Length: 105
Image (cartoon, rainbow, N blue to C red; front, side, top):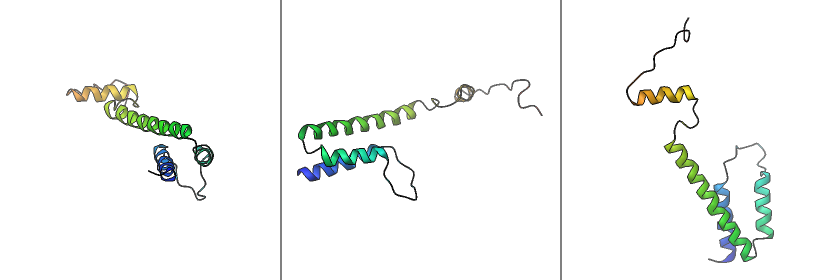
């Protein structure tokens, strides 16, 4: 792969690994996008900087996959404790008793 094509591919890969941004009326870049763009236009011509950018891309990809797996296999991670207990009880076929004073009219 030629050097410009390799740079373009790496730049696009890094952009894909960044968190999505909401669309705005002015299609301006975030400060992180600007910094990334500047570093690619200035520094990545050296082989060492290119290798560091590739390593960063692999790290970001691994972090995204880790977060995805963590959310998939720990679904109650972001729930409140009471909701997590209620769902755990339902998983084994039980319903929690209603507490006196709650949900009373």
